[in-house]
Length: 138
Image (cartoon, rainbow, N blue to C red):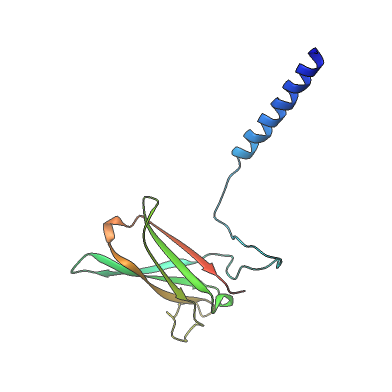
């Protein structure tokens, strides 16, 4: 009977150690993909917020410019969530054009930029974060 309790205690200790090790893993916001393709992502090095559309008479922000998008994302949909302390307060989306084809020309000729309008307009002081993700493209 003592062996059973010792074995059970050892199994529980190992399970607790494995759970603790998994809880200590670092998580970063890298590329997320799903499907059979091993290369679904179109932009692996990230994008850049190039500027905000601030109406100075009202103090409201109504768009954001996202640049440094890889041209391989052409035709994909770019989504933006505007957050205040982790809570989504506005959202918008835009189709990623080819550079110079109605897009927001990026300074880097090998990258693309896009203007994303979002609703509802937000007071600049309320915006604490932005989440950007791309769906499609390859």
